[in-house]
Length: 169
Image (cartoon, rainbow, N blue to C red; front, top):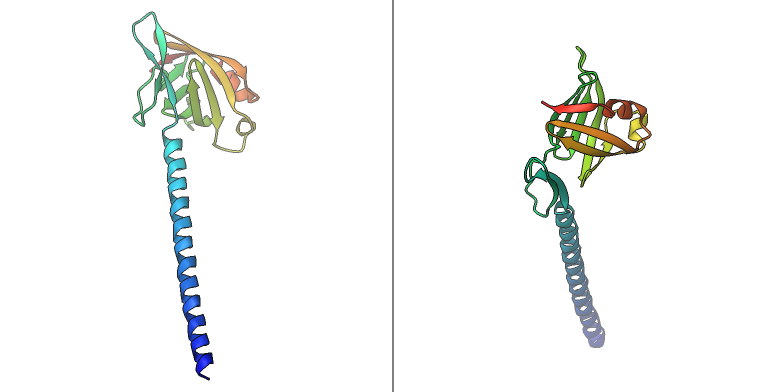
């Protein structure tokens, strides 16, 4: 019986050592996953952001902002349509497009991405055809006015609203 006790005792020690080894491997895997997730999240927050700025009244240049700090670009702000008084508000990566009436009709709301003189509108509000595909436009700013020219947009209401000339409010 003495051998069995030694054998059983030895077996118990191996199980304890194996449990500790598995625990150590699990901790290392969790630490590696944590570092990987942190790296991916911080890279997504630091992706390049293109904003349009003016160096003087007659020339415009694209500036790439690699920092997390937002720069106010010329396209940001509230714009009013010369056609029907609709309001387009661009703030950072968010935009709203509204018709002026008592009910405050919301035509479009979502996110936008500016790259050079191209802007892409992605609707995230409501269940309309505009949510299916983004609208891609080029824009031109002269003085306090902006015009949009459609590159690709399946949303007819967004296209009809943006095809106007807008002035900065």
